[in-house]
Amino acid sequence: HTQAAAGVAGVIKMVLALRHGRLPRSLHIDAPSPHVDWSAGNVRLLAEAVEWRRNGHPRRGAVSSFGVSGTNAHVILEEAPPTEPAPAPAVDPWDGWVSWVLSAKTEPALRAYARRLGAWLAGHEDVTPAAVADALTRRTRFPHRAVLVARSRDEFTAALAALAEGRPHPAVATTDTGGDGGRVAFCFTGQGSQY
Image 1: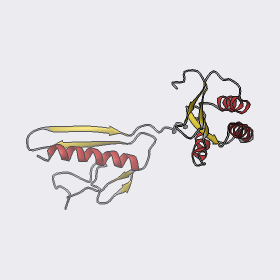
Image 2: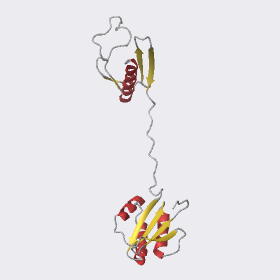
Image 3: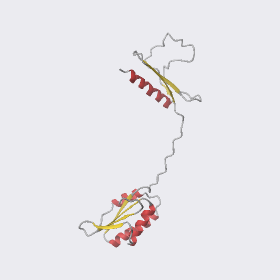
Image 4: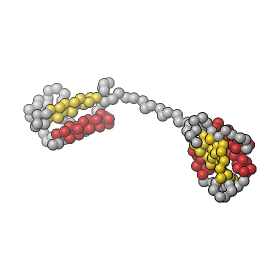
């Protein structure tokens, strides 16, 4: 039976009217009912859509459903109070784990690469860690490799400095790359690392 669907359609129609500030025209009415005195009061049929002007109060609309089953329903809808959109929260692009992959032909070249990247990072305050990670993955892979996993600019700076100076680091491990004679160094910085 379409009675419930008609009621839902009426609610949707009223919500859209409230949202757009426009009263839709009345449908399926050829002539006003002769059983109503249309000259008395301020009630009239909407022959066409009109602007729903504000009057200092919230807009309200009624939806009625009168069916042959004897089930009648009536609901009054009121528009929500105007609100200012909440400002978007500031997102720190350095707040989250990111990995950087470096590689070079020799171990001294890898350390020099880390030194250059650290100097470049110090001069580029606007760079994001994801952009650096993406750029590094597009470079040629050489036998001597390092992976730095960090979540802040300071952590990446410290990891690059440790790698550049060849210093022992509490989170550095090396392993064979698999037959090509290269080595992989993993620099995992920060507390709570899972690696």
